[in-house]
Length: 510
Image 1: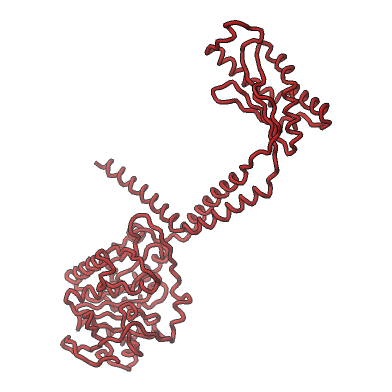
Image 2 (image 1 turned 180 degrees about the vertical axis):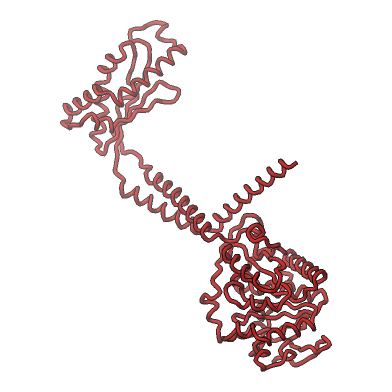
């Protein structure tokens, strides 16, 4: 049994390696295509640039072991021994044509006598090619030369002098001309096809090598095993990648929209169940969600976890603690004017009750911002932030906090000290393992536990074709949000809650 389990494990590891390899190659199909195109065109260009016309004249000889003097029935019948002997003679004649000094010298002398052109025996050999037909004793001699006259002159010289050499080398053999020397014709050029094919193969091979080296250096996250084996972190759930028509649609993947598909919805129900179990077993009510870099879907996960809990009848507060690039409003498709959420409360501009909004269509409470702030770390590290979480914990069944990426900025580690546990989001092929390691090490220094990891945007199937980039959190897309404000979606009714936990109509946005 142990042997079978070991063998099955080895087979799974082998298959996993093959699948990872194939996915790396397929995901970079465009790079392979570029290299193949460049090298194929280069090969074709080289073939055309180096092409030189070549003319070919051919002679066909028939080799037999039958002596010319044999007559009668003995000359008519060919036994197996005769065929074997004839093949032997043909092979020897081939060698004689290719390396025989006397043969080459006689050909050169004959050509000089008839045309006046002088060639060394090495030059003669370089222009003569010999092939034996399969299962025959026919021997084809081809003379190739850039000059049409030269090719024909050498071919006719071979035909005129071969008997002198053959009679000396094979006195009992019968080698005859089956097809006389042909007029030299321009040979077909296959070099362009050959060079193009070579370029195609070299381009594809080089592209694959570059992809493998690059992926080895980047060491990106490719499977849940990378999380479990490298960091010993439990996988809460695997969320499949949902294709959208445009980039902006990806920020609006909500379980309230049936178009996302049943698997997507059920996955967040599974996550909800695990969160509820953590609540029952350990009393956890405050959950912070983070990732190692942006574009991994942490805000989408935070929003859907909150929605899933709210749909089960729980009172849920979703806090947007990403004060650098708040995105909860955009994800939920709502618009708030001049709201800074946590920042307004900490700075005394608004009370907690004034800042918390109730979104009726989601049955969800929000403490969110519509604009970035200039001093996010200081705001989150303040006593006011601790008071916000304490108040939220006392008045709601669950508090979900969407944090900035950990390991890039200190914000997530700061917020973690106010929470019961953290949930880490890692997106397939969008982050390097070293980034995950750095982020997790940052989280581990906090007071909060790590509940587990949501493996996000997993390929639908083992092999897939996808390409995406995970830019740095402070890349151009992120840094530009300081001091800016933006609005998303349509206006919605908003409410505040009282100390009893009931919702109260506050005012309606125009």
